[in-house]
Amino acid sequence: MSFESKLLCFLAIVGALRVYVRIRPTSSIAQAALSWIGPSPVAGESWARFQWRWALYSVSWLLQMLFAMSAVFLLFMQDDGAYEKHAWLQLIWFALPLGAGVALLAFVGFACTSVKAHLVGPNPVFAAEAEPPRQAGGPAA
Image 1 (spheres, rainbow, N blue to C red):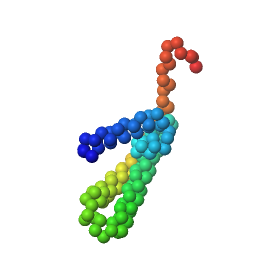
Image 2: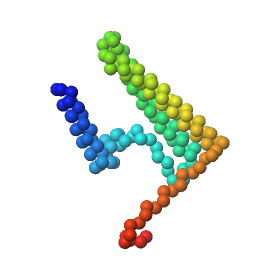
Image 3: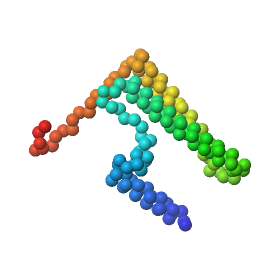
Image 4: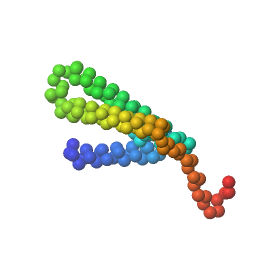
């Protein structure tokens, strides 16, 4: 199969998944595809609490990286020459600690921001969203 046909297949699959996620946003596939977005502020929530939720979200990514690193390490233990034979394993073994370090750094940053906002301030509260404007001629509430 040529590179162009592989690329077209990949783009067709990505397009089909985008359509599926748009049609069924509550499906498990859509939830898995959009889980990386992170928390959103909630009306009435303080800045410190919102930053703490981002810190916990960063910890969840850190745990996922550590789990993946453990799985790759177990794969290396199964086959003595796997690290030398497969270049993609070397890339994964380089990328996973890098991702874990970024997640750890994000946790420290968000946690420090949360503690600072809680103890020193400012610690504003997110306001409720304004009502969307009503269309002319629509029913009055």
